[in-house]
Image 1 (spheres, rainbow, N blue to C red):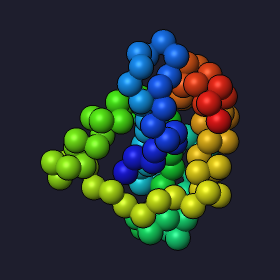
Image 2 (tube, one colour):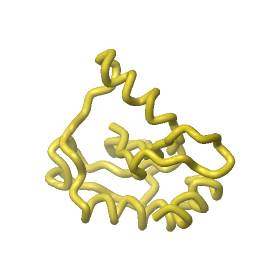
Image 3 (cartoon, helix red, strand yellow):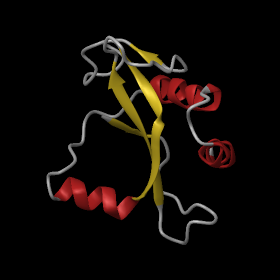
Length: 112
């Protein structure tokens, strides 16, 4: 699962097309190195059924039209929106995490 952290918006230095910032949510499994910046439990979102975390290593910027096309093609599924509280936790985790790129942290600080 990916959480979309920014509404589609042009990002300075990336052209004029609107972009979204995606953060990966991963189930905690034995032997997996866990980024504890944003831990999630079942009930935090309907999609989360196991203890999970946001793996900020896989955060990425995508053109909004690319994401929309993947949804239309059935490659990506749209789930229930995250609550404002959950989005806030994911933002705060991104700013704490040592695994997200500095560039993405700068984008978040500028645009949020």
